[in-house]
Length: 281
Image 1 (tube, helix red, strand yellow):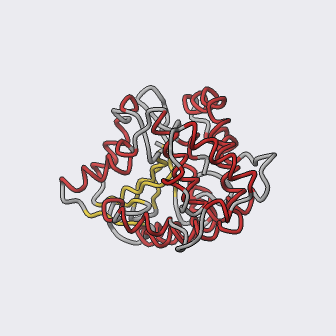
Image 2 (cartoon, rainbow, N blue to C red):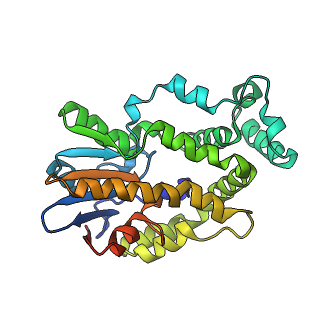
């Protein structure tokens, strides 16, 4: 979540701390990077400590192995059943707001009329970010995946595509809330960028956590959306990461920055286990 805000959680060489942690026990270590899935060219080069930690690792771990996803398969999973229309499964007020935003992005209705509500929400946010100059191909996932493939480095996924789709499908009951929350977050994010960057410069993870996980005052079922999109997935990711820590092998693990922070974020979950030492790099 906080997809637009998380774009600005990128550490450059100007910052004393990055959103990278070393997680270790007595005989194993992984690097855990809170990442962005879209970026701009000016966000590169990344801080030296990030690139060096990747090179020090023997395998790359992503949320999902993105170059193994068939775009047509993904599109089919985002579509409503034959005969259903998006306007029929959203509240009129929400659908009207969605069409207004699609019109502002010059996206014709035929493109989104049969998308599931969560699919339309993702599509509109990706379109808006692309308009603002952010590019999915420049995201950290792609950046390090390209390196890993060229080096024949092993690549693993914390989730499968079906795992991620399953999370979105759970949002069906809260689809209007998910849309409204996502749009509110996207509209408010520009006002918080300076605050976010200042927190980065100070290495203030508590402040960053407050910004990312600050409950929305106007969106209903906020807690349920967060539970589905972050908390439930974090518990499963934690189990996978702990499996990697059982190997005598160094892994470079990349997850969306929002998965790291908060009471049910990966940093707190791993720390509370009492088995690992966490060090921010």
